[in-house]
Length: 421
Image 1 (tube, rainbow, N blue to C red):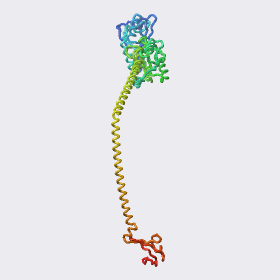
Image 2: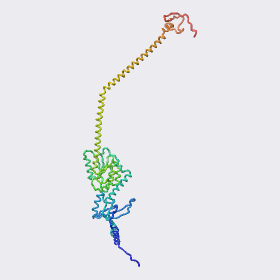
Image 3: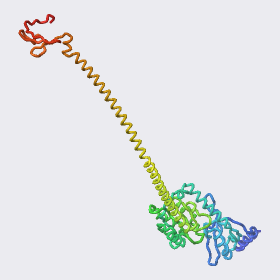
Image 4: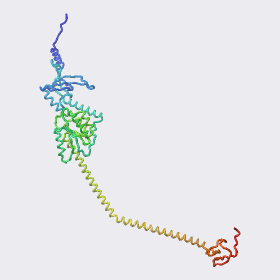
């Protein structure tokens, strides 16, 4: 005989699955998961879709529906958001206390009883660390920090919501600073909360970059608003833009908890918009004091230089008569030496000339006709001219012969040429 089949209705089968699940998993379990979808019903219940992704590939490897009943959600949501500074929404990772349930009509799901904010905070910290590490690997994490402010920063591009209380506080502090410094500001409006925050700030940065020569720096400020809105500032695209921006950036987005990623890559981080204004005024005052110090130092140096020159002039003036006297004495000494040298030179020259004249006189005396006549020579003249050759006379000519002790007149009778010719 054929054994009778045991048939169950779908409801009966699902009821058995429900009972088996309750018997096998009677406790609550702490489960790690990522929220892929979150929807709050008008009744106050929150319906979630939870997933788990494979870390290496990002492929979804598990999925489950979950519910936080209204009575629980009213307590968990504000506590979670206050503790983490994040909105309870899709995209966050959570550690939750759950009990598995199976409903005959709605199937398998999880009922959430509790949530651990520390896990989500840790995940956010890990996410920030991962973004910073990526920026470091790309070599851009410290680029904005390394930019040098001008000595007198007075021109600032402001990124903020025009209606934000923080922007008003910033401008009030700038315009009513106790020193009366003039600061030029230009507002580049941007959304500072909500889904458009990241893209809105990046667009403002792009507009500023088109006119970077007009500004000394950029100030990103946000005042008020929920701390959960700070998630937008833990953004890689926004952080990469700020890290590589050509002007130094100040962030003052009004929070006391751990720094956001853009705080960590900006040139200067302050807590609030008012603190950003105070930082600018402090820089201007520092420059003012530096200039005043330089002015005082220059004045002191000029006074000291004048005093030194006066002292030098006084010493010179007091020593001038002695210097003049010494100079005159020196010149007198030189003149005396020159005169003595001239006298000596003249004496030498006169002596030399006397010697030369004596020599000439002796020579002239030795070769003079009278000297020759004294030595026995005679001198024959014809018509007053010395007869040097027989050709100078002719027979019958009258000659005068000069001797040492007188003269003889004779007539030429005969001319006889020399036999030696």
